[in-house]
Image (cartoon, rainbow, N blue to C red; front, side):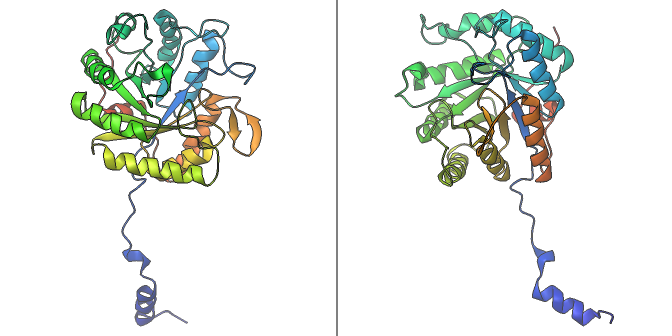
Length: 320
């Protein structure tokens, strides 16, 4: 029996799916950042890279799997944490020699014997002596005031440091750890930030961030924080979600489905691959590949380093 025109029209009226408009929540490129080696010890994870060659190779392999941003806490040979900018440069030089276009996100280290911008000026001057290739962006903590370790990041210092970094050509990456931080970042942007779009990141499941170790409340919390932050911050905000702890994988996928702009993976924030299995992360590149695969399966295009520069309004560092 041949389907006639009246029959087809009746079907289309019964279930007119062809008239549904697209849902554009995920209709933008997804930026993937890799954070390694972080601060876990080899007793916690024996696969943590401890040599400069291994640290650099972990980042290089991750870039080859789709990471467009690399974030690194430098360590000396053997794995001892280092605040020496020369050590940071030595490791990142290995990365940039192979992946010259990748975007770098590097913490500025503070001299706590000083105050204000002076805490950071000497370190920043050394690492930017040849330009900003080693520190194209830098995270600024905006935790609650109860944490003594983050006491230096008061509102006034944020307002001073943001334009100072912008003048140096370093993009501030404003980190939020709790609901209190959303308001702090909103005020800091209003009073001090000039470099649009603004780079803002929600942190979950690590340090002093609100815990996300219980289902389903963790999912509700992530959804609420993303929605609330979008509502409270300017439209010209690029929003990331950096999720640590056991629940990082499903919550990162949730953030991707909610249209988050940037996600971060790697051994800095995470120990286990899955929330329900005691399988330790062996390779940063494996985690990048996992998230890139999931993102693509959800229909999201993975951003290249050049895409990231467009998304964040970054200039390509001059070659030294």
